[in-house]
Image (cartoon, rainbow, N blue to C red; front, side, top):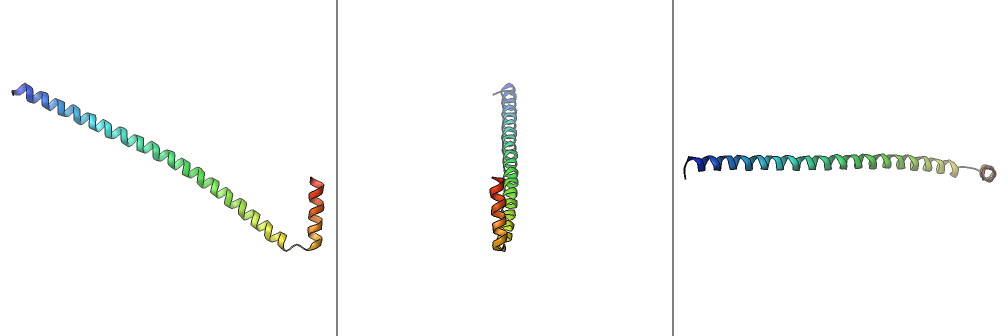
Length: 85
């Protein structure tokens, strides 16, 4: 076990260490890309939820208005609806 063997072992350890660092770097990039994709998906889901909430709010406000209509208002609404169809 001479000096050449010790140098060879040192270089082998450096190469293994470099490979391990590259492996860790690649793993972190994969995780980062996955997190970006999930964040984009959550953003789209949040936007859809916001739109659905807005539509439900509008629908509930229209329902409140319709609940206080008199019979004549209801008849007028039905006539206009038939006319549009």
